[in-house]
Image 1: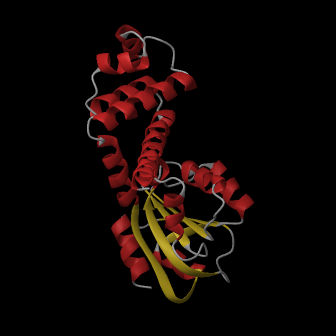
Image 2: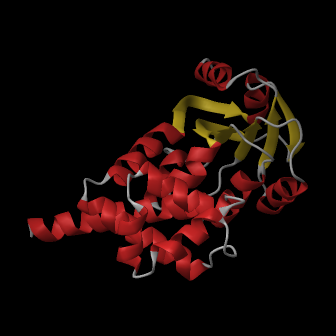
Image 3: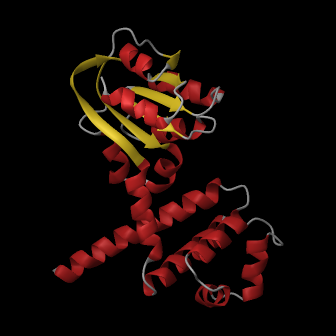
Length: 237
């Protein structure tokens, strides 16, 4: 029984590792170099990985250096599965990286003792309303997350953790580029926050605005100087 439990936990850890690396590679403008960066980070020799994948080291080198066309989905999958398998046999470095990123993704989370108007949240984060009506909506909590780490490190149950006790809350994304990725992630999730606050860019990608409108989400752009200032203001409500 204990052996089966350990095997289940091991499979879950491997799934998280695969998802983290795959997300990073897919988002990269140079997938080959992104794969190489992960191999080097985990300390896996190119020759050893090539042997595990049953291809020649020269072929692997060509993909990593960009001398061959961008690797396809099947190659990327084989590469990552072989990488995670080798990592597992030598101490599971990647699982520790996933665990650390998971903890670092959620910067702050809290529930309000009494309902708080969305307009009050807007003032607390020095926000500019982009979509929705903040006049009458009550919120019951907030979560502040690191945008990049949330997208790459949280999956499944871990992603649901950001909603705390209720989805009727403000979800604040920091370190945002265009605002597209957070809204795409929310669109794909069965759970939706009532309000989303973006911190980082001066303007948002039009797609982010459109997705917020479709989902009926109040969307705001924060002008706060730092994520620390946002967290402090929300804790003070």
